[in-house]
Image (tube, rainbow, N blue to C red):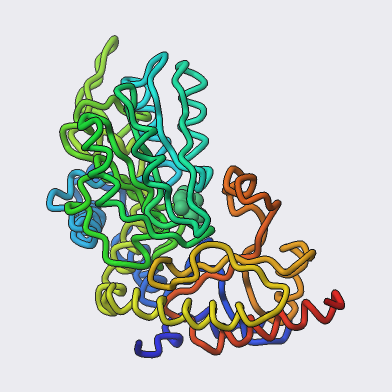
Length: 407
Ligand SMILES: Cc1ncc(COP(=O)(O)O)c(C=O)c1O
């Protein structure tokens, strides 16, 4: 891949006197100057509220916002941009479905299926819905190498399963689910079961064509794909979104308000109450342009190469345990690991002294931590701006950790 590091101003920053090695893109990606400049240019030149005014700036802002929606629809293979709802992040997208679709469709005795490796944002909303409505939350296990246990997955789906909600790429194990095949498994057992896929770790890292997956809802989040924070995406099938009640009430989302009743705007604005994050959408649209220019196949190839290199290097360090499959083709750009007897936070803080940024902790996946019988893990995650030199620095940093702890 062409060296793009100069596009990312933050990467020239020094941390603790050392050039930063940013290995935490699964938490949030860095932003290229093209995105930063687009947000600044929007505020400098086009800022106004959307869909409200007939003055020129308002028309420009509306065109920029709706133009971004079209770009995002194209980016993930969605033909109808009005099925793309802008939300704050993946978390809000899942909560929207759990509240709106969930409270309409889930009642006592119904079953909701998730997996043990979900991020909390795709776990807690369903857990709480189940608790509130007397439904049963079924949790499907994974196999030893982190791959979804498809036999258990199939078995979990019964005549009572109303929705299955699962990850596309795991933020801890890096596992890439074969979502197309898993959707077929669900449809084979109970065609009317709704399927939500959490694509927060997939869309930034590989070509995703939602129209080919066959699911009912798909969510992702802008800040992990070079976009700004505060903007995320819910895609839903039109007929489902149309039947769902609004998630929030207020301006923008109404068609008519009378003293004692109101009616709702069309899709997608029915779900976008209040002034949206216009600049965020503009930035996200430019992030999609940037990724398109590189080509998502190249993004994926670059990450396979880096993960492969990282796994080979880390496996050679004594006392390091890597979680998930060791086959780089089966995983996304994250490598979670632990160093024997050393808390992941200690690993992360010694690496930070060396200017290396990794994530440590439970990664918002406490059920998975319990399942793996660990309290926490360290995680290095890669993106388009990382190089083998970053991996070498990580390896050197881990050697330092071992020295400090006399391992
Ligand atoms: C797999 C997965 N799902 C959902 C989320 C939530 O994303 P956000 O915090 O942007 O809502 C994350 C964030 O780390 C994630 O990794």
